[in-house]
Length: 62
Image (cartoon, rainbow, N blue to C red):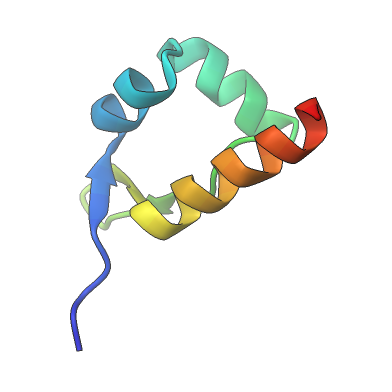
C-alpha cells in the first residue's frame, strides 16, 4: 500500500498562490485544507486533503 504524498507548507502555498499569513487566517476561520503538525513543528498537508479542498472551493464558486 502506497503512503499518501505529504506536501510541505511552502509547496502548498505556491500551488494555491497564497501567502503564509493568508493561509493561517483561512485556517483560523476553518476554511483551509487540513494540516498535520510533525513533532519537530513542521507542517504537512496530504495531497488528498489538498485536492479535496480544491474541489470544495470549486463547488462554492459555482
